[in-house]
Image 1: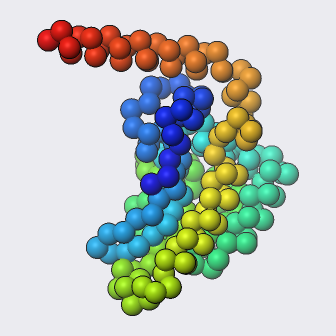
Image 2: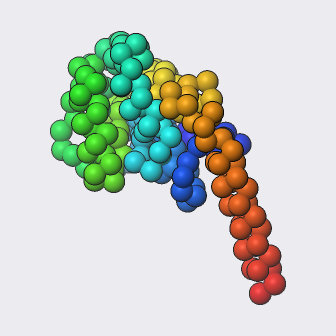
Image 3: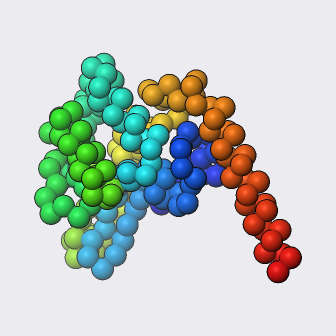
Length: 189
């Protein structure tokens, strides 16, 4: 799993305290289980800044063109959808309306938006010599999408760094103080 480090997470604007970094931030993942091998970009509904940033990108025609051009250049095997929904459309053909509908579905069902490439485990084992290179290429392709859609100080489409930085830093400071108090209570016990 490739997720923002603790230092980088401290700069991301949010309204609720961070309980789980994998739910509070978009991330890239390489998954190997008994059914499949997959490389994915996952965006959970709790990743407020990232979800808002994607919505802002979709709302701006120039930024949207950048995103759709990148998705159109993705390999045919890449899909996009909400985890738990049986059919995933191809990422190449995703439009702004499709992405908006998937984000709405993700929010409504509290399930992550998933974009990536998945191969059945048997197929991956049969082609073990070449799968590592394909997975690396897929990860690089998704990293470009990740860089384009997630919130960062240099990709702030929601103007969060200007209007909410003080409020967010104040909330994080309070969070740190409360953790310190809790640790002191635990030590005393």
